[in-house]
Image (cartoon, rainbow, N blue to C red; front, side):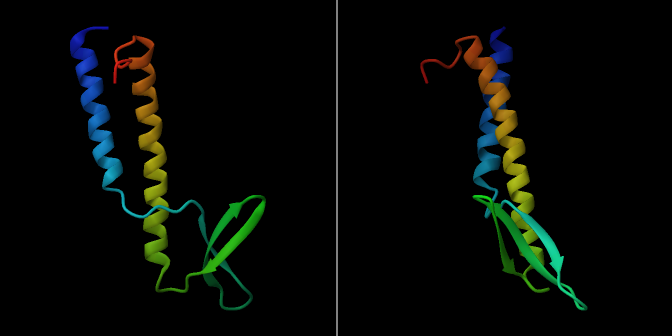
Length: 97
C-alpha cells in the first residue's frame, strides 16, 4: 500500500469523523401508525425483547424521522470507518496512534 493511498484513507476517516460530529440527535427505531379509526403516530423501539412506544402525534413526526435518519447515517459512517481502519490496521499503518 502506497503512502498516497494511506494518506487518502486517513483523510477520508477525518471527513467521516466530522460528519459524525455534525449528526445531531439519533434514535434507533421506527415510526408507526397505530390505532382503530383515526390512526396515530408513535415511535417504536424494541429493547431487551420489549417493544417501547412513545406517542408522537402529527407535530413530532418530522423530528422523529430526522433522528431516525441520523441513526441510519451514523451506521453508514461507522461501517465505512471500520473498513478503512481495518485496512490501515492490517498494514500496520496506525498502530502508533
